[in-house]
Length: 65
Image 1 (spheres, rainbow, N blue to C red):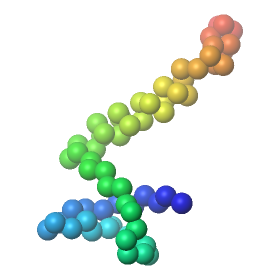
Image 2 (tube, rainbow, N blue to C red; image 1 turned 45 degrees about the vertical axis):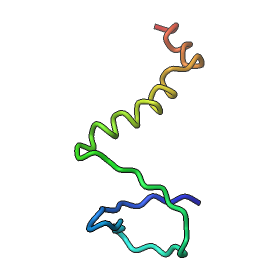
Image 3 (cartoon, one colour; image 1 turned 135 degrees about the vertical axis):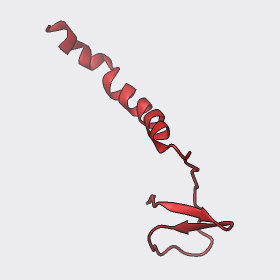
Image 4 (cartoon, one colour; image 1 turned 90 degrees about the vertical axis):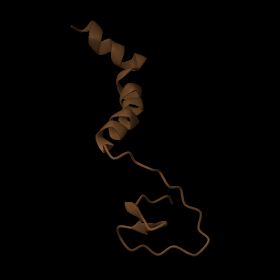
């Protein structure tokens, strides 16, 4: 099962913020966050928010007002 952990990059190595036990050779996916993380999270959440709010099933509520 996928797990997300925070890490920093220092002296050419990825250093995890918490100890975890993973076997050598495990494939990992690294996402580089910009220094201003607020913009990253705003853009990342827009897709999920659009999927929740922009759907035909909820149009019935607009007709009630």
